[in-house]
Amino acid sequence: MKPRILVIDDEAAIRDSLRMILEYEHYEFVGAASGPDGIAIVRRDPPDLVVLDIKMPGMNGLETLAEIRKTDEALPVAMISGHGTITDAMAATRLGAFDFIEKPFTSERVLVTVAKGLELRELRQENRELRLAMEAKYEIVGDSPALRAVLEAVTRAAPTNATVMLFGESGVGKELVARAIHRNSARAGQRFVQVNCAAIPEELIESELFGHEKGSFTGATEKQIGKFEQADRGTIFLDEVGDMSAKTQAKVLRVLQEQEVERLGSARTIKVDVRVIAATNKNLEEAIQRGEFREDLYFRLNVIPIVVPPLRERREDIPQLVRHFVKRMAEEHNLKPKRVDPRAMDALQRYRWRGNIRELRNTVERVMIMAGADVIRVEDLPPDVRADGAPRPAPSETAGAAAPAAPPAAGTLREFKDAAERAYLVQKLRENAWNISKTAEVIDTPRSNLYKKLEQYGIKQEIDG
Image (cartoon, rainbow, N blue to C red; front, side, top):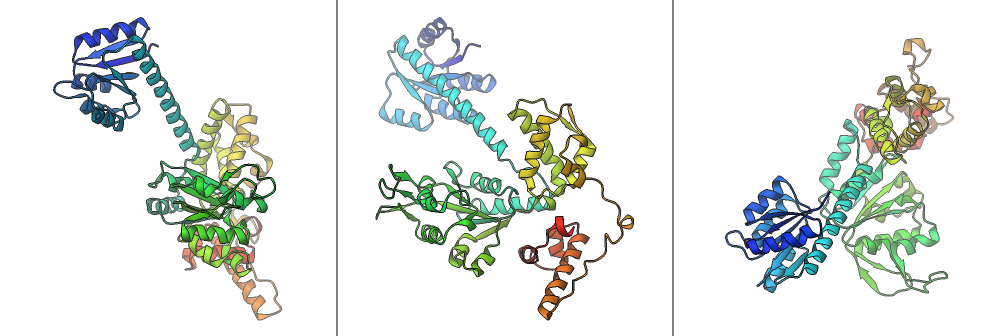
């Protein structure tokens, strides 16, 4: 298909001249004698590029450009200037014009500008497609009450510059929540820099976060810009923040307090403007008690705490998540889309998903690749999903299934109290289908406190369910 070039100029001679140049090079020419006529064409049948005269009676080129921008921000526009001033040029550039063609123009000058504009359009289109693909990759799927509570917290926290702390088990989607906060903040146009503190060796993490000068340590053959500098004016996501060493914690605290970093091997401080989002799957309050995490850093990070629920607390989201992953896997692996049989979906919804959404995604990917038919059946699922996802007998059919967990014998009063509290919590969790939020409400305790008790007593659904 030939690229369509719209020329908006009140002079017929200019339009005819550009028609000959463009049609000779096999472009499709479309002409408009005024700004309003050109805008109508853009709205009705958008061209691939616009060539627009600055000086026109009635609606001038700058006014026309402003209206075109409202209709299509990505459409490349080159301006024709015969008597243009620096002021006009600057105004047109601010409005998004990518080039100027001065009168009298040559064929070569026009064709170079058109080629550059079409290349720009292609790049913008590719960028838009990549951005949409990235947004789809990091989309938060589901509408359960537990997830809606998280999204409401994101909506409130995102527009601010406050530090956010994300709590949740491994695989629940803390990164997706962090990206959602960044995407809905005033920093959305700047960088989102992710650092997995658990994946970087202790001897390298300071260099990764704060950078280093050449020769500052053995192996430092080049200067390195740290992650905090890279995230300047944007957002840094410190994942698994509980795995940082005491020395690194002290330096991160300084960045939060002073908004400045110091590269290894340098005495110079560098000012940074960074919004920090941290995440952990550990109980940091217990880590503080053990002397493994700084209390002052914890309070600096924990300005806005958001608990991301495990998948077992949002089972009603599983069918929607499965369909989302089926579609994505089909696109990523060039596979034919598959339908999920109701029995298979039921098994997927019943399974405990110890690895949460990450485990669910990997399971769907495996089944999409390995299942031969167009329908995913329960027989296609991994054996543990089939077995654990089998329908459970009613309480009347299983002796003792609904019986309260009796506390074991205890030697001291403290041991008895602990055992009794554990048994009480297990029973309440069973009664509420292991829904943490609902159980916390029923027993009248904050959800964060219930999470602490679960970790304290080692209560897990796969063990106590």
